[in-house]
Amino acid sequence: MAVDGVRAVVLTHGTGGDYEPLLESLLAEGMAPDGILLVHNPSTRGEPAPEPAVGCEVLSASHNLGYAIGMNRGIERQLERGCEFVFVLTHDARLREGALQALVTAARRNPEYGVLGPALILAGTEIPFSHGGITLANGAVEHIHERPETDAEILPCDWIDGGTMLFRADLLERIGGFDEQFWLYAEDAEICLRATRSGSRVGVLLNAHADQAPGGAKRPAAWSYLMARNGAAYAYRSKGVRGLSLAIGRTLRETALNLARALARRLRLRDGPAIEPWSLAVGSGRGVLDLLRRRWGPPPSLPGGGDIQNVAE
Image (cartoon, rainbow, N blue to C red; front, top):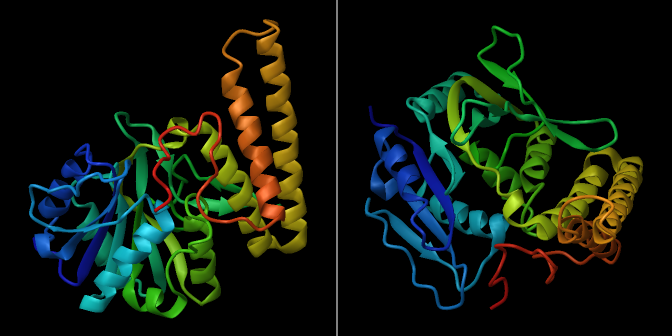
């Protein structure tokens, strides 16, 4: 069955071909190739643009733009062409059968929802990963891992994971795209916060499913940096000064614990390499420092930075 009124933005990193199964699943769900835009963040300087087998358009950047800027470029292109919904996905997402059709049908039946997502399953398993997320009173964010006991079609939540988000186009035109200062991480919660404050609802469609592979383990220091900086910024926007101070306090405690773990491993009092907790400590500590001096954008060079490369022109 064809899916009308939807344009998709698929954000990919490198040219390894991980996006092909996702593109094939979008076609299987009824999307036409000309409704899909692949945004290519090159992992190395001069990396050639991918050539998807499905024949969709490719928008290639000069360097790794990160999530927020890359998605925004794709969203702007798709909105210019006109559509009812914009479906944004990362290349490692995998739609399960019927997910897109179910999301679009539910969105049309429930116009008060400006942002909808499927329930997410950890890739390669049947373990629930996310039924949306909540923002705690202290500004911290948590995924809802287990499916709640409810007969409702849609589970209202504070935010949904950025790997698979269906937006109403008119909402994006009203509130704008992702906050590009965040670059990567917490921008999904932040845009959902703006959506909610604009009068729209955010939710997870419980009978739609997709597989997702979280990538934080591929970039531990950069992950801890961005989560510390962006997480505190989000806590401030959602809960004010109290949220900001509590977020900074949490991060400083985690930094101290990881420093202690690194020292214990260095002295062979604990098993394991010292670089792991050391990189997490350096990343989170630098994240707080850069938050206070208002340094935004991509992470700096860090030990254990992982796969985040080619971030400058």
